[in-house]
Length: 247
Image (cartoon, rainbow, N blue to C red; front, side, top):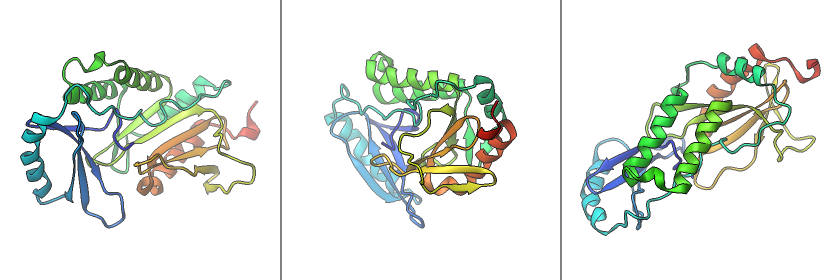
């Protein structure tokens, strides 16, 4: 699930590849996964030094001859794009919150809705050709992400290729996995709930700010939480009142 509709794709002769950085602290490994057709091939090596690029360059022409381009790997949905929205959400509050979010957070750059749409469509075409958007499943995932971005979802793309993005969404429904008495992390006056499960193969965790007017969800790589959550907390306190103060 690290491979999503916004994951950058690198094209080599005969094949397209998705890069995943090893998020283990201290690791310098990266894995390249072929995504242009079956069979899927994975190549793991040191991220720097050119060894992995050389291996991919040698494998790609062979893979292009044997892989079926009619069955490209379908990416996972954009994180939080399918998150349920609260029925009583205040759209003006979420607009104010989104405006309070910065253009950059600790090496992650905020994408405009136009940039997001272009990125997803270009990725799809790089993998499956100009007719990629005719695939109903793939086009459905892209349209789902576009609708969410037009609504209240904000995407921050990592500077380092192979890392997963930071995604923020305002006005989501209260997390179903939360139970009374759950341990919360307090940042300033905002309590955060860390939803327990990671998606298979992903380094992204889901956090929910549950103490203010709107529930704010954040999907992010676990290594980035120390920088991302304080920044989002600041935007919450600048744009929302606490739940107890809600009229």
